[in-house]
Amino acid sequence: MGRICSRRFTAALLALLILTIGMIGIATASNRPMQIMLEQSGRLAPSHVSYNRTSKGLEIDGRIEKRPHHYGRILGHVEIELLDTDGKVVGRASGALQHFSPTRRNPDWASFSLVIDQVPTEASAIRVQHIVGSRH
Image (tube, rainbow, N blue to C red):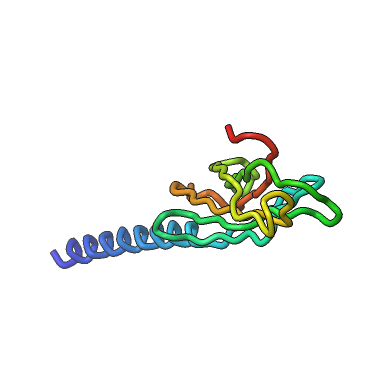
């Protein structure tokens, strides 16, 4: 009888250990740092990009800046892609530009802020690019 109890206890302890290791793996995957990849166009480039995991999801903030010696408006929108370790797109969001500085007519930069509420656990990188034209 003692051996049966100790076997059951050992099996239960082993199951608990496996479950705990699995949960630690999930928590680690969702909290690991993500690489930020900035895609530059000829005239404009993303900069000052940061992200923060909150209760709302993954908040991504930054700027689109003019490169030196370029003038005129900053038109278009920002597109964010979440990539896995193989470079496959696992999530996507787009958002409008806002807070043009110093003026809307000839700004040096415009800011953006997006929240991705559903972030796949396999996401390991954030690709940020400026797109001229309307959002799809």
